[in-house]
Length: 457
Ligand SMILES: [Zn+2]
Image (cartoon, rainbow, N blue to C red; front, side, top):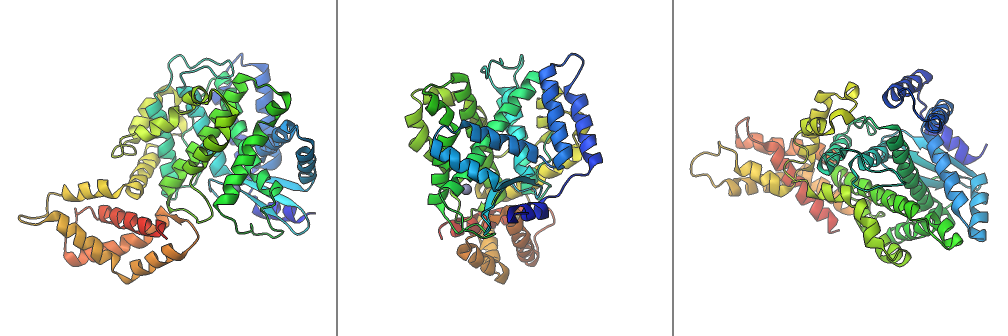
């Protein structure tokens, strides 16, 4: 048994057979009526069998790896990838992280792990894209009544808010898709997985990994070069053939765009500061465009236009209402929402917590200035300034600011809020402000200041 295999066994949490059987049963009633296509049915049965076999979604990741290897036309790279494949374990973790990771071991084996948190978010993003698109993709025309892109963006953001608030990642609204939509969403997710694996494979090919259980220390340059090589690997079949099938190019570009859109949203909403080793997803995407795709595709703008649907809608959500109302998501998804699995209570809690964690200082200040009980003649802005300064001067927050400035690790919003909130509450209690005072808004301002200070490290 290789070291990688041993680690895989240790890290894998398998779903029990009855849990797998229940979720397959549910998917079956949801997606398959009488007269569904035999081809899709066969795909579904194969996926179900893999789920039973692994107890995780790793079957999907295996398929994406084979798809990637099958695309490589360059003999040298192809040989190296088959050598790596022989020493490679691929698995799916269920820690709820939205990430993928590669480890190299002293015995020459490798382990690539993709988390269910990532798999579920990419699945949701792909499904929402399929339902809201206005353009034909892989020969499948848009839905008769496409989903409003704004609703799609809200649903995605609400799901990320749940992760930000510490909810189990991977719990996303369950959507009802028609068989052709289902296979289209599947094709998009497969392409996202292929890019993700191409990125991880690039770390191995470029020898970024040391032979230990911990990834070797690397930084932005290594991440960017893994992305740039991945972009070549993913399209290598087309380079080799000397021609590109337009519908496939479109599919791949949209998938990669959606992947970075999901990563970007997750980073912004869940993390107050990023780890020193990882460039932000937005920056990675722009580097890919500038240093790869612009040269690869003459009609890039036209290719990217449909792919920008969700990123644009996300950017367009008015910041003060984007999480406020899960009812809007439910109503907007309409009959596309699998309402048997929708809990109004859970999603309102996520929306509220997510909103409290992600409110910008400007929005928070507005809420504070609008508080009706400041008392006559009080300069509310000055009072807020004093509260914030006092909170930042407490021992707990001075220590937190220092660790945020000096640590190379990312800081989650939730973790920071758990330290900032009690410190702020303490300061507010001393000032004897009334119970209705929006102390959460002071926490938001303090968090943004801490984040900004750490970002300048
Ligand atoms: Zn990487």
